[in-house]
Image (cartoon, one colour):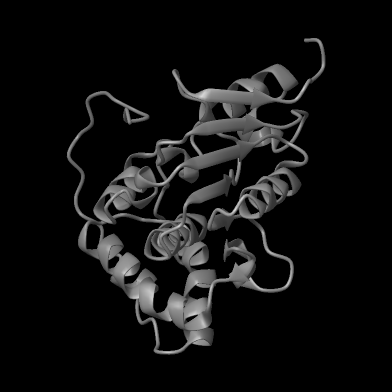
Length: 229
């Protein structure tokens, strides 16, 4: 996959992120508290998040680019992407495929975000996988956010579960969403309308351009019928 951003960049001093990702604790509640505190800790320490996917891509590659070995459907859009992701996953599962599903946000449990054949991520799995991810962030100075950490957890879970197929719901936008580091098999774009205008743009056309960034040349694209313009 091509990197999202290129160009000359000055060498930056390595960040000490140990206080953001550690201590983790040895049980599920303490690990979950650490995950929920990540974004606030990044803001507290004045760490500015780059407007590119370099860090996310680096973390994904350090994990072995796990989803690149699995047929993956990438779902974005403004409304309906969560429902669409769930229905696609159900269809794949009904066809006999062991199917991973990554969605956000959750309703009642963080573990809902990462599922395999409708089975939620187990608490002990999160406790086992999180130290590896946080360790890579600290070692390689990658200021990964809550969403990026969660996505990394999903990638490891789907790989270790030996999924036959995976459905990934975009978090926000498309082009610079953390999930857009994967090599997808098909991209799906649901309806597009005004949302998160401060980040994505002030018009439907501008937002559509950002969301269309999850599609890459030579890949299948399925899009809902939107407004004529």
